[in-house]
Amino acid sequence: MKKRWLWFVIVILIMIPVGLVFSANTERIGIKPNVEAKAVVLMDLNTGRILFSRNGDTPLPPASMSKLMTELIILDEIRSGAHTWDEKVTVSRYASGVGGEGLSLNEGDILTVGELFQSMAVYSANDAAVALAEHFAGSEAKFVKIMNRKAEDLGLSTRTNFMNATGMEMGSRSSSEPRDPAKETRMTAHDTAKLAAHLIHQHPEILNTSSKTQMKLTGRELYLSNTNWMLPSLAGPYSYEGTDGLKTGYTEKAGYCFTGTAEKGGSRLIAVVLGTKSKEARFEETRKLFDYGFSKTLTLKERLNDWFQVMGPRAALFH
Image (cartoon, rainbow, N blue to C red; front, side, top):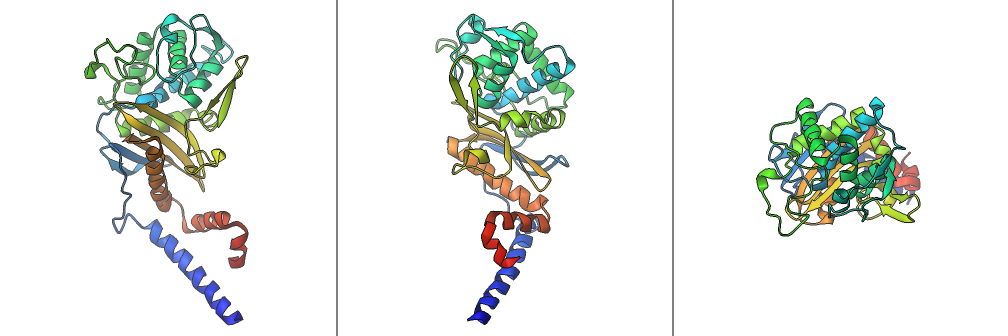
């Protein structure tokens, strides 16, 4: 009986490294993830290398993922000293009527820049984004000009164009307002990944905000939950170890979108998924990308350590 158990242990110890090596070389044998979305891109943040792309240069409506640019501009302004997190912002009638997902702000409400920023980054609040745009630039239209100038400075392609601070589709405010596709925000998956990479490199503190599972608005008794179901702290069916950002999005035309980032063993990936058919699908497809990416970027030793951590006490048999 002891010999049979010993052989079982030996076989397992052989099979695990072989499986890990096989997985780490999936690109060489042509095995790539079958991702169901309008466009996807997977980037290795450490090297900037694109590990996987499908329709990566196709301009598509990004929904709230365009708020990554809004976040970047605000963080740049805060760092420059031009503004502070404690500044008071008075909500305008325009901002209060923006529609879509939001805080249900009323004209005249007063919140701090920090409260509005976290509401935008964690809960994807549209009214918070517009209130910030007006506060920082004087109007949303002026803020949009800054967004497009910044896109040019970052070297984003001309296929990416911002039309508002939220990513909302034109006509969303009023059913009587005609929609003009030429006046709607468009981003490519490649540009979105590049923007996310720049945001993380320049302002790594954004991950402290984007990884919050919940935030509370002071004096409002209002708790806002993170729309990113892949956060490990949520401990849900879509949680993925190492995930700490970055931005979800949805509109009728865009479908369900997600720009996710995760870190394992010193390797950080950025996955952009545009246009899935459900909330769940955007996270399921991102998981496929993360699994594929980490199989390529993690060393055999790191993958073994990751396996031992997942197995916990059961792995002690093989140590």
